[in-house]
Image 1: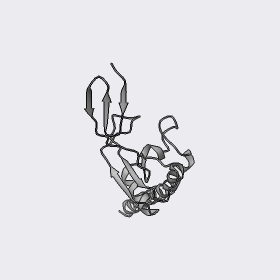
Image 2: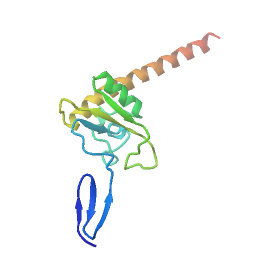
Image 3: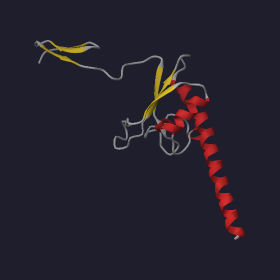
Image 4: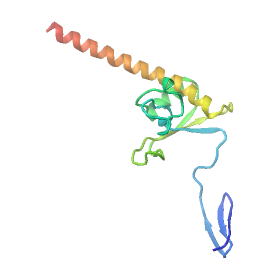
Length: 141
């Protein structure tokens, strides 16, 4: 087999064979892919967490990431049917963050983690409040 010359639009094999290849995910300098696993406190660094455990939160999904991105003022697109490469059996999805200011990925993750922790704390407070209301009703009867 001959040498392979790579081109963004096609792969050319020098033995007179040409194949057209469409690239779905090209490098986009103004967008950053963020998987929920990057911010999940229940995962280890080897399993995909990218921020310190004390800044991460448990049970993160794409909807929470979207809300956090909106809260900190970042535009995002959701890809819910995608699978994280380290867990190919589970469809966790990811978000594409607009990175117009040119922040590096680590900084964006830390900004997003702050928003995620705020959302998770609100969710937990609402859950505890509803449990307290439910327990008071049972006492009165």
